[in-house]
Length: 170
Ligand code: NI
Image 1 (tube, rainbow, N blue to C red):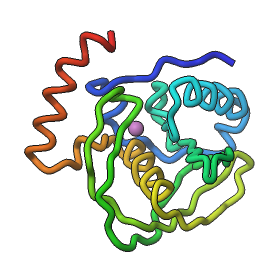
Image 2 (cartoon, helix red, strand yellow; image 1 turned 135 degrees about the horizontal axis):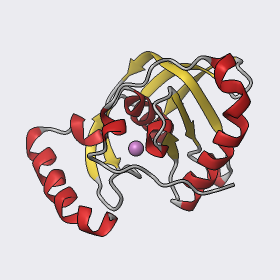
Image 3 (cartoon, rainbow, N blue to C red; image 1 turned 120 degrees about the vertical axis):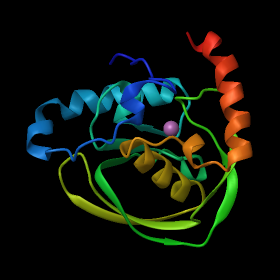
């Protein structure tokens, strides 16, 4: 399966809220699309990837935070956050801003509901890195990057780094 190009900060598709996915309509192309997305995420050594990052405005994301070093693949179609608890300030990065990290406050624990690759509803409580990944990927589907959530000073610092990095990203 081909590794896809990952869209970068500044591209329109990353700033656009994705419309809900129609599962039946998506079904025929879903297996191939997911294979390409997993290949792309793994090649970039990411823990999550959202459809807009491969140029598709679709409410679809994948996550694998490798709990205890073992792969655990989650497919999120039309995900929703049902509840949030606590707060955790931790380092965050994004494959659309490669090499740039910043601390960001997120809910420490979230409950998410979504459809899987077979169109079945699942619900899951994520804590720590998984909670962060849920919030980060769902933000992508709403046209938001983590930098948009940073306090003013941190955002300026990250945007300076982005300006410099854009030359390298090509
Ligand atoms: Ni990201």
